[in-house]
Length: 628
Image 1 (tube, one colour):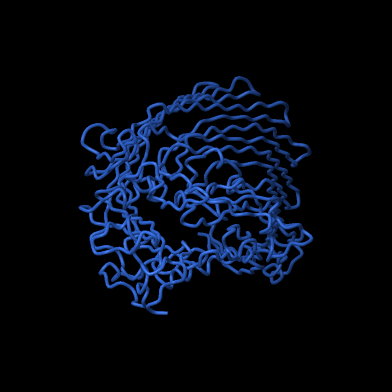
Image 2: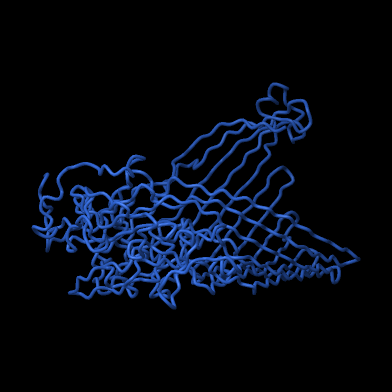
């Protein structure tokens, strides 16, 4: 109702501020609708990451030298990369409004459908946060040098050794015109890039310690058995976490405004600092909010990379035994592992302390560095490990049949997903104050994977078992077909249980807030339906004084996946060698197996525990492919 205050918003100070006035007339809205993010509802309006572009230019010369003598092959080489990237990835240029504070909920009212009050906040214009950024184009620079030596030695007819060593050096990124800023924790201030050394221009010290050994072994135990093993270290020199680890994203050249607010702050006046008051949607954005002259660390998020950030690295190793059990029947059994350390992940360096149970202090007032809002650290805190037993069975038959079965039993763990690679409630941003609690199942962890495939050259047609008995017409219809099948069975993907904290329970917008588990959250199989895959009675939203519950990361797993695909292929010659048309008839999920999607793991959602999607049903496909 126009002119009325929403219930529970805070009394007469909010009176007559939520009239239906439409969108603001600020010229920033001329390009399209601001993104509207209502917690529990699908976002609408302009996508906040557009418009954007990343245009790289790469110069990449290489030189390699190989010397072979007898049983020894020595190799060495050098590679150089010069990467210049023009980037426009600073958003939201048209603004973003968030509605998740539930300011419209009357005092003392509880509900299992909090999204209703988030929608009411939107209707009244009671946004709990808004964001805006000014246009800017960065011109980033990075230089890389790689060199290696490798010696491959055939010790005897059974044993071959591969011994190598790489040295890798890559500069951190700097900006062509020194439009780059970093946070200095020693003075709690921003420092500007300047001409001089790479460290002066990038504000991050280059890591000169990236030595990477490589070892390999192949040993013929017998004529039918081979042992293979290998170990190597790899480095990650190019990190691109969207715009989250770009120091060029900082002020004063880029002013990325992110204001979190509560009605208790009182309405904004004409000259009231935006971090100290409540600005409803109808008031738009403050004039001059995102211009460099008005840059303030209280209004804008700051990106921070610690100066002594080491290069991320991955150690990989494997041991396998391959044996020909019978003629054309090979079994390969192997152990594969890796360990990653110093991987760049994200967290709020200025993460606030929790409110007490009876406390209602605003988020900004609880931050340890009161002169800054969120300080998004891109730091080398990421780690992970992977271990797997891999078994491959391969059989070739003399009459055109080939069988292959690949089985993997594995475990993957880490403390953050890759940025923009998250699913089912997982997050690339961590609880900065308790990094150990983030270590758990990887978002891609699926312990059991089994794939069975076959290729069968049907025995009809030219040069096949029954080729000479077919009439030319029948040859064209029945001859030369190939049957291809793939059967896939995997464990279900992980689900990260979460909840949306109220504004007085939030310590940052960065991490995932996980609930408390009171028991097994998965409904027993004999009672489970798509409406109650998860049991809400076993999942509890914590008290705001302890907003991070006891639920481990990715603690639930979705249903397994099963699918059988079948294809029928035939090639037709066109008179010239290597020129042909291949006809294909393919059926994906031939048996029409129902594979349910992941359940909703957000305890704050009215849809918690429900499954609302399935993998695609049976699909048939006809196609022609020309080879020439």
